[in-house]
Length: 340
Image 1 (tube, rainbow, N blue to C red):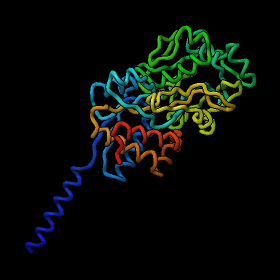
Image 2 (image 1 turned 90 degrees about the vertical axis):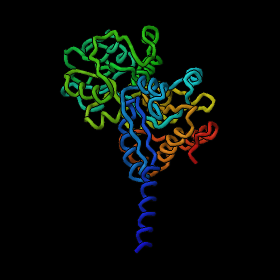
Image 3 (image 1 turned 90 degrees about the horizontal axis):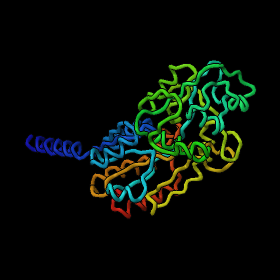
Image 4 (image 1 turned 180 degrees about the vertical axis):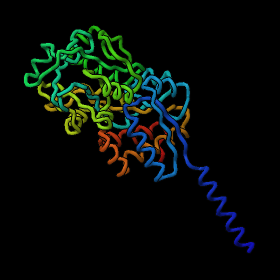
């Protein structure tokens, strides 16, 4: 009897220790990857009992929070350059690749039917184009009955990496936009815009407002059923917002360890290469090695687990190619945060 009690006591102690030993990490920031991080967190917990909590708030919030050491990692779609990473004592690596689409709500215009050149997109968000039947839009949509209606551009109200990648595309594709606005996480828009915080609220606003258009991550287009425009590529042809065309653009990534993986993928060359593709990045402190290892353990699992990779693709994201994940493992080893 005493032996059984002792055995049960030891078993209970081991069980309690295992429960307490489970990793618990928290991150916040970019809403661009929020759907896939949420799904990965569920699968990771199921597979390992380790808990990952990720909240949105925008890339700006992700950068400021991890700089203040609030949480174990930050998420940003706007990568930091070496000097800023050194100043903030942060490490940076990509987590996954996604795409920004121009979602619209125009009665009678189906998914992918609307074609928009960079000139048209820049005109809409600068306020130079105010109606859907403007000649610049009409010339690429001769087969569509565009309404004589005012356009409502919906934009991010928060400091946003999605805004950074959207305006990076415009700054590369349209000279006048580059001179007047450039690329940034926040923009003083020339158009009369409707602001909304985060990808989810931008998507729901477009859904509710007739004749509106806004930029959102592709996963939110899928989850809301919104229609999205076909965009003109850098090569001059037209690319529908599809995973196949996102992958063509993603193949042009040029990540380097010495640059802490800084790379902006928008407006890449190649026929059918969708012009607004972006990597999203993870920031971790370089002075909290043990916490960093917990974070890299999660992403190491996400980079290789079959269910995690399938979940990412189902949500419309493009997993990183093996050459990139191999580079990330080398980077983790270099800075002593490799979980293995």
